[in-house]
Length: 195
Ligand SMILES: Cc1cc2nc3c(=O)[nH]c(=O)nc-3n(C[C@H](O)[C@H](O)[C@H](O)COP(=O)(O)OP(=O)(O)OC[C@H]3O[C@@H](n4cnc5c(N)ncnc54)[C@H](O)[C@@H]3O)c2cc1C
Image 1: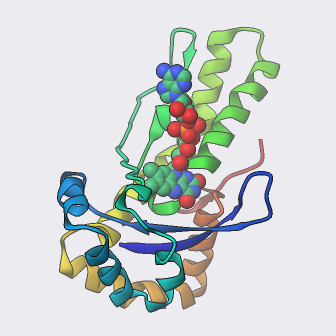
Image 2: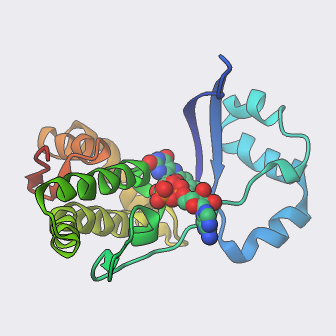
């Protein structure tokens, strides 16, 4: 998978940044590095000729950062008085780009729960209850979608190419997709209420 995304501005500077993603399996990193930069650049340019100005800024394979991911599933996001937030509690593949949103909502929820309960254990249980629906939905949706974008299956790739464009035009599905990408969903049919 190749992706090119605007990612904001450099800290304390006005330079606009773009991120380029190139997805490979973790056990292929060494052979990818060994094959060298020009082979990779040719592969990218075949898919996206307009990526050339970005590729021109890459002079060494060491400039590419390998960012692995893994799945974390916890029955409860706390143990004793220790609380688990963000990726520590529910890391997934970055398919939906929601990891930061979910981590920020995680952080806000126990802070609010502490104002509603004088007892740490019941505040932690409240935190777990309030976050359960949304986290389960995003973990499910990410796991469901990842094979369509990152797998060896050509069939899933064809299904993705046939359906994704059309889905964006179908009113109900496109609304669900946008709401999901905005972090609003708590389930397929449930939108998150403000807390
Ligand atoms: C390739 C990739 C692309 C992604 N793209 C997106 C995206 O487009 N949008 C999005 O919202 N999310 C994206 N994510 C997910 C997002 O990065 C994470 O969900 C988010 O950073 C989780 O925040 P966090 O604070 O829980 O964990 P982290 O951001 O991992 O922060 C944990 C911090 O703890 C530090 N740490 C670890 N161990 C110790 C220790 N023992 N002592 C002290 N400090 C320690 C680490 O150095 C790190 O700074 C992506 C992830 C990957 C891998």
